[in-house]
Amino acid sequence: MAAFNPLEFRQHFPFFQSQPDWIYLDNAATTHKPQQVIAAELAFYQQANSNVHRGAHQLSQQATALYEDARETVKSFLNARYREEIIFTSGTTAAFNQLAFGLMHSLLKPGDRILISTLEHHANIVPWQLHCLTQGVILDVVPLDSQLMPDLEAYQALLALKPKVVSLTQVSNALGHILPLQQMLSAAKAAGAITIVDGAQGIAWQVPDLQQYPADFYCFSGHKLYGPTGIGVLYGKTALLEQLKPLLGGGEMISEVSFQQSSFAALPARLEAGTPNIAGAIGLATAIRFLRQFDAKLINQYKGKLLQQFADGLAAIPGLRSLTQVTQSAGILSLQLLNEHPNDLAVLLNEQKIAVRAGSHCAMPLFASLQLPGAVRFAFAPYNLPTEVEKTLEALQAATDILR
Amino acid sequence: MLQQLIADTANGLQQICQHELPLLQQPADWQTKYRLLMQLGKKLPALPEKMRQPEYLVRGCESRAWLLHYQDPVSGKHFFVLDSEARIVKGLLAIMLCFVNGKTSAELTDVELSRHFDALNLRPYLSQSRGNGLNLMLQRIQTVTSA
Ligand SMILES: Cc1ncc(COP(=O)(O)O)c(C=O)c1O
Image (cartoon, rainbow over all chains, first blue to last red; front, side, top):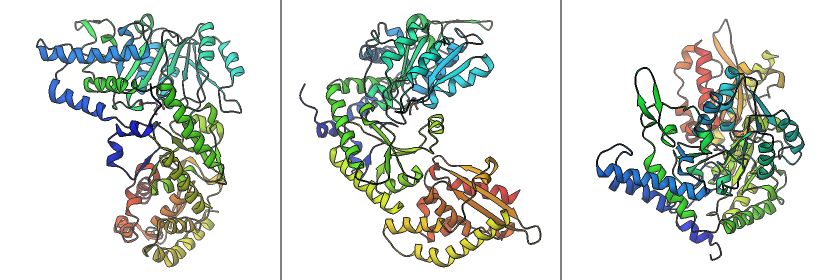
């Protein structure tokens, strides 16, 4: 493959032609969509629209084939073993709600423990909490070390308590830090835990090879991977997925229903009640095919370069403090202006048409543990350009001038 | 303590009405506007940490603010004390208070905040996302004064 060309990559995203004035650095919240993805969704509705798995007619069969092709694309992308292991959901949040509900009502017993880290997004906290109290399950949290990475000694000590489930994020959405999951998950497996990975941020950084990866479950959202909103994936090992109690009941997920009881359909239908997001699945598969034209390593190198350029520039602006260790980051840098609330900085950046996120980034417990009101997050994608980094630095300088 | 804060707030608001609001109405670059907004927030006293109680908290999406309310039993006038973690938000909230502080319930029903913000060219801030919490503060003011 040729060297990565960011300008060429950027050309695929019509958003930038529509909004030429904005510098978009909120890529951890959602990424933009390439023309191919937009066209694929449109084409489905214009040319192939039908419901899946049910019509006796050929149109439905065609729609079903497209939908199942999308599952096949995701399966090969993640190198999963079986297509049944790929469950389409509306996103990471939905995947975690299914996981929490399903595990709490099957494999987990009162007194069991679940282990997460301080870096988790609310999606990997709240669904567990919804059941912990009623099910008598205990949620443990790995604290952070001085580098704002999981404290591995404390992690080992918590593993000694024999948690049934260890659920960790691949990449922290608030700081960008890449967790040493190979090591952490292997230790969790050795301790006999079911392992879950929140790949919402990680998927755009490193796509796991799920046949090698020590994760039983892996979740991600399409919209953070240049795909549409409202589509995501819950991957699970077949034996475990089969034991999950379905969160949603309804059409498609049953084999037989009477008013006394119902029996469930086989995977993946069992966990996909109701009409799925057919166009979304097709859009996601298109995003994956789009992305596969590019060398992931080169993309990461390029993102790393942008991040380094940004970090170097920050050093010249007094008062700014990065919470992110740039060398540990998947393209995100979160910072603080000393003694200032992140919202003020974000408002002044917004005024200069720099799109960033300020606040606690759906990771309130993390910022509570840091005793900070939040941070301003700059999340880079491969369509961002060195000139944008420069302009962002200038805008930061202007903002800090006003605040001081 | 509360009485002092109320007096200081009323004082600050009076200064804002006289000095800063006319300045805001003049055309200026965005930097000047924000500097003014932040200056104006500083005219209101800071709420001591121990008074930042949950019952006064108004939680915006990105920052927290607090509102204390007192109605004079004789005149029926409403008085407020307010603070925010974020300086720009505090400035905007201070402007909001200019139009409601010291008014009776009857007078408050006539206040059209959006018209005032229009006159100051600050309308975009009022309608901006839930992020800045301005609308939440407005609702809180309406709730406490109609109770
Ligand atoms: C680490 C992480 N987990 C989970 C989520 C939730 O994803 P979604 O809102 O797409 O369900 C996000 C999104 O911000 C995230 O960054």
